[in-house]
Length: 194
Image 1: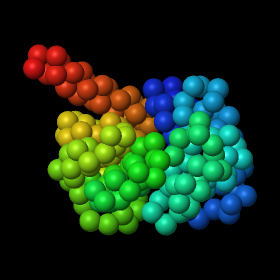
Image 2 (image 1 turned 90 degrees about the vertical axis):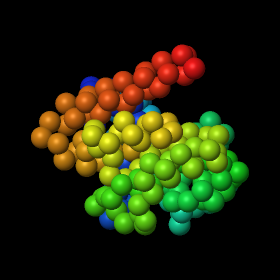
Image 3 (image 1 turned 135 degrees about the vertical axis):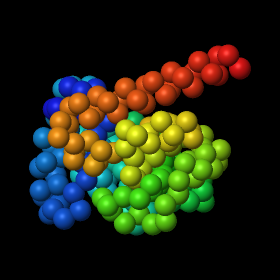
Image 4 (image 1 turned 180 degrees about the horizontal axis):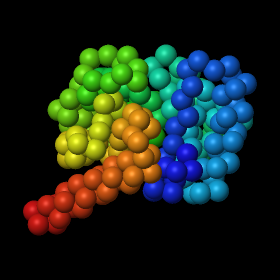
């Protein structure tokens, strides 16, 4: 995490599908402290109660996790709640229920998890048109395809393999951030000239 923070990453999600709840809590406590000291946002995946216990910035829920309304009761109004979605309908329901952002995907094929049918960049555009909250693209995103993902309407991207599998995590994170910032700047220039 410290290498990614130094590279400029400012949003972290701790995801542990196989560890005990105690192990998830203890690791989350350490990571929340690290993120807080650096000014980065830290989210716990799946567990709203653990997110509340470690004073994380928020929780990222799956479709089978605690409903957003109940997570909000645990976390309060100031914490952020995101949820993974795989269809327009799920994204609209999430926004209506009070989600602060939706994760949407998988955009491309991924080996990190089985998240259903590949949605492609056209899927991002459909979701962007359906909701007013931020859309974070998930699944198979790399430095090579992130430009298309941002241009399609994603407000951000969630990546694991593109950074953690790289020989140099810091350089991979920096390259991804630079590509996103460059694409956003291009888009802004195009909007200003319109």
